[in-house]
Amino acid sequence: MEIIQLSGYTEFEKLNIALKYLVPRQKADCGLEDVEFAMGENALRTVIHHYTKESGVRSLEREIASICRKVALKVVRDGKDQAVEVKAKDVPSYLGVPKFRLGKTEEQDEIGLVHGLSVSDYGGDILDCEVTVVAGKGKLVITGLLEKGMEESGQAATSYIRSRAGALRLDADFYQKNDVHVHFPDFVRKDGPSAGVTMATAIASALTRVPVRHDVAMTGEITLRGRVMPIGGLKEKLLAAHRGGIKTVIVPKENRKDLREIPRRVLRALRIVLVDHMDDVLREALLLEKPEDYFGARRLELEYRGGELWQGDNAARAASEVLPGMPAGTPAHQ
Image: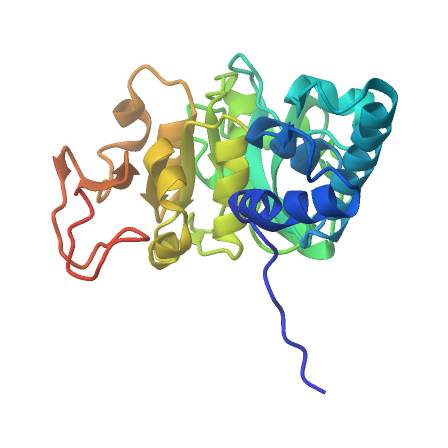
């Protein structure tokens, strides 16, 4: 037997399926064809984000059907003369208290708090990583609903920060005087190698007492020498960042090829920084007045801004960089 893995629908795909197929079908099934009934995009987004959590649309159709049945009951009571429009604010009155919480970012820069990105069978989500440092003897504690690989990533992140104590202006023996506690608050299963850079950034912030930018999220694995390794599920993670209000996302440079799968509207809304070393992650995420004093000059500067590929301060106009939905040979900046 061969197992074939299929990625789930994105938020935009679910929305289009609902508008074109699910709502009209349930409207007909509930006898609302001759009723002036409308369910807008914002209402459907509310149902998608707060009342369903699946890779397909079966639960979404059930929730839409529940709304249509209650609208039908209202039409029977009040008559067909009055138009019925379901808005986002009306959804809880039809479906009750929201079942799921939408991942959101903090509104201010915090010390020891970093926004990571995770992916599961239900799609992507923002994964917060918190770190606190207390007096101790160099013990590392990592808590949360974790797989073994996550703990090993935390150990690699800690070893890298220790190796960069001089650059971060930490005492050479700081690890002998402090215990570091890394915690992932959200009680969801976290697995796969993709949170190393997140933990390293949170540890560096907690030790140096330098805040992390609240509008930055990141994903990537770290090696002992600080190399940033590629990850999977980039499409779902960038969609989650866009949905959660993130402005800048730091991703491994080797995942550059996966950006072709990202919807154009998401690429245009996000600033995507491509890195291959942990120093560049810290330079981008930490609120340092002069990052070059800590890490020196940045390596090859490569990022997407507004859907354009930028190298340094210039937009790269390579014909090979094609955004989704564009014909081959079209430069990314067009």
